[in-house]
Length: 85
Image 1 (spheres, rainbow, N blue to C red):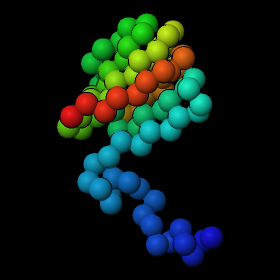
Image 2 (cartoon, rainbow, N blue to C red):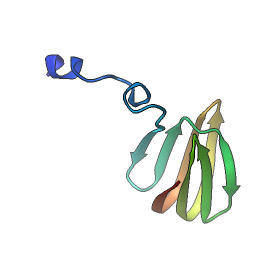
Image 3 (cartoon, rainbow, N blue to C red):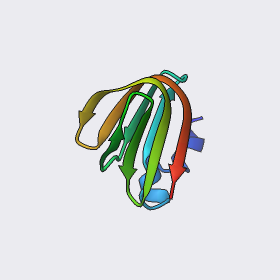
């Protein structure tokens, strides 16, 4: 397994230009690394600026739990994630 991993870069940003790193834990928590800022923050919708696109999260009870540098964590009931170019 270790040999296969060495063939791939550990960072998607190096392989594909800039790409955000998105980690989801079920539909209750999402962490986005590479955010340039929060464009919209409402109970049912959060939009993040990420490079040349916007990532939109829709759901219920959405909250920003932490913002640190370019890292944003969203919690709540996430029903949809959209990539807007």
